[in-house]
Amino acid sequence: MAQPELTSGFIRAETRDGILRVTIDRADKRNALTRDMYEDMSRCVEHAGADDSVRTLLIDSEGDMFCAGNDVAEFAAATPDTREAGSAGPALSFIKRLRALDKPVVIAVQGQATGIGTTMLLHADLVVGAESARFFTAFIDLALVPEAGSSLLLPGLIGRQNAARLLLAGDTLDSDEALRMGLIAYRVPDEALAEKAQAVAARLAAKAPEAVRQTKQLLRQGIGSDDVDGQIEREAERFGERLFSDEVRAIMNKFLKRAK
Image (cartoon, rainbow, N blue to C red; front, top):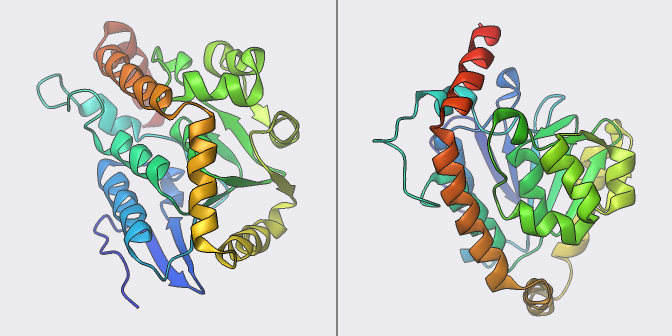
């Protein structure tokens, strides 16, 4: 069975029993995502959409932290001359492909989910969270603005005040709060996370694929698909502008000095 061709060295993919399992494998760097890793993840989503043998996409990660978000060193090294315009970059390309996929998406989260580690969950169908899971968007603390449509999707999903906790106050939500608010669908002990996520993905893979596809389409239309796409674009434009502001550069430089 053909598998997506991956080049970053930090993304693994395997198809078995109708499930394409994509694993982020950069635990020594807290599974922070680089451009190459985003491109690999986009290839996986494209493969899931094109391969009829794939019924469900399952995303998980190695180590005790789901994802630290974007690799800050890459952010800091970017310049206005080299950045992509608007949402043309690999991170937003991945989000757009994930959002457009007409097959069910399950994501398993353990430990910290930071930045896009949290906002990608808004484009999953079912999220399984370990008891250790923590959700933190980080944008406001980096003097940045939200991305991935989160400024529109989060208020509708968890309520305006809770969205403001994540996006404006910079709070961290624990797994109990995330379950109560509806950010995750299931909460399990850490040692049961992989088994539960696999079981959920298998249940979805066993369902009638055309009914699943149409149900996903109806759910997307119910939250205003055009509005979400437009918000993703607006966020990306402002995010790109903020990325090269003096505020952001100063914060990132401090972060990198502490990390040395």
